[in-house]
Length: 135
Image (cartoon, rainbow, N blue to C red; front, side, top):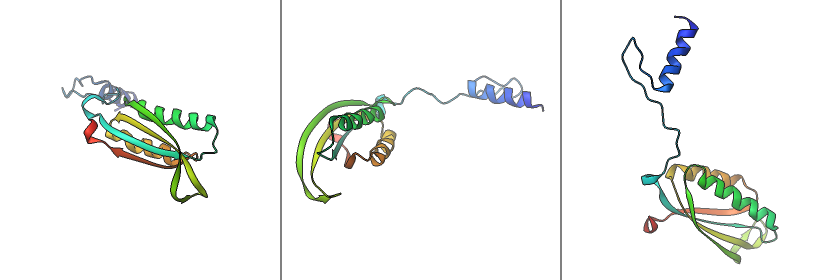
C-alpha cells in the first residue's frame, strides 16, 4: 500500500466518509463547544493583593472571562467585595481584594480554569465551588 493510499484512508476516516472496500462509516468528533445539558452552576471566589493597580485586576478578570467563555460557558454575575481582612497572613498580606463570580460552565472546563488561576501570580488564593441550588 502506498503512502498516498494510507493518507487518503486517514483523511476519509477524519471526514466521516465511507471506505469503499469495507463499507464501514466513520464519523469525526464534534468540534463545536460543549454546552446545553452539561452546563452546571459554579461560584468562584478569589482575591488579589489590595495594592495591585486596576490594570492587574482587569487583566485577571479578562483571563478568567476567557477561560470560562471559550468553550460555551457564561458568566452570570460578578460581585466586587472589595478589601477584606484575612483570617491569617498569606504571602505577608493581612488584607485581600475579593471578587465573587457566579457562572455556568461544562464540568470539564473547571480544571482549565483552576490551572489558569494557579499560574496567575496576581491571584493569591481562589476557590471554585459547584452550586447545585442554582442549576
